[in-house]
Image 1 (cartoon, rainbow, N blue to C red):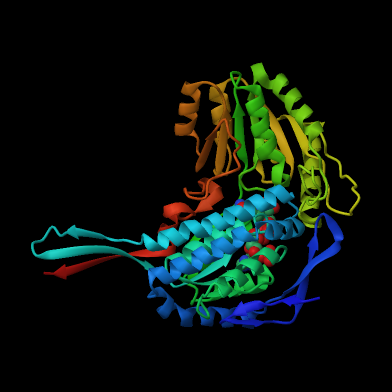
Image 2: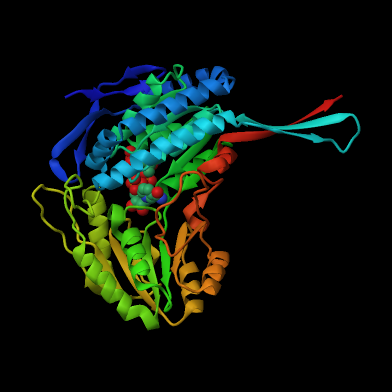
Length: 477
Ligand code: NDP
């Protein structure tokens, strides 16, 4: 089997490899991917540092052409890359193709942004002096990504980093290296100079930690768990380095008595269970007012009956497998915790067998949950959702905001008054009205508050806040 190697200083290197297993069929090895070492990582950082002076001064047309070319190739290969994504992560083929299209769109967006780089000229408060405000690239950006969006998250970090003139050392999650390798290969062939983009696949404790410990990494952008996020923060403060964290969520979706029932059920089923519930924006707390509670639970349960859990590549599958054995154990442990805490298991909760051996779990719905239970406070990251019954809108809003997280929040209502009030008073970074809490656009800011995020927003024009440093220059006329 071919070993997919790391890209360091423009050369493909590395021989030790780890196997990437298909969670829909654990007999299938998706590929062999290099297992980066401390030395590989140090070499990649040195290569990125050496490439920075030239790339930071490269023309905006050169950056535009490379990013555009990459976006075009990803789009042209969406079916093939989507299938690779579905095989390595386990989301369904339509979801995986959708994510691949999104990655292409992100490269297209930042190809355009490269041509729109601009500053400001402002008169000084003192006579005969001009003030210019410009944005400089940061330097070497360390990119550390999780397993749940194997192509979109790398795209939304790599594209702006390169667009604004930074060089990159990229470490994807060990579980899902295949799509990362593919987009680095695409960008490399699109004409990036040697050392501008370096790929070091391997373990977080080795590759990621070496990045955190290096004084030559001037910015780190991280998506993943709260625990690792805290390590990134501590190490970055030590090195006086800029950092950005996207971590977990325990996203609420409020359903009010006046909601359109079918809109509420579709939104809850989509954001609670699609992508196997493995989205940081998934709705895991459904906060439902008394008048609609029983109707909503009955309709959602009926909807769950219709959802097919099976091999991600099989036509007709709505929910693929859980990503791996470790995450499956986390999910089943939380199902047990929910039972012991006194929540009622209204649907699912069981492992299932399919034609191919994989990590299949029924979509699981708890009712009679309270907001104080662990299943309502801690991120599970699987297809496990709890329904919390509340008296009225005021209690629903207070319950929605009573969480250590603040990524996304939704409300299903036909009341303009409550929708408007919720948008203003939700303590989440993203608010959805009559829409799933998951499913966001690629050209507008993405991010949360409280324990979910730290630092500037990702995506859209707001990405410049992280990937550049503002300079104010004064000139005597
Ligand atoms: P981790 O935080 O462990 O992993 C995220 C990334 O950090 C991976 O690339 C990982 O590498 C890397 N990493 C691990 N240890 C270190 C380290 N010491 N220094 C630097 N980098 C490191 O999250 P998981 O992927 O294991 O997911 C666990 C939980 O995180 C989930 O159950 C969920 O709660 C949450 N999560 C949240 C996401 C979000 O989008 N908000 C996305 C994914 C997960 P490697 O995996 O190769 O070891």
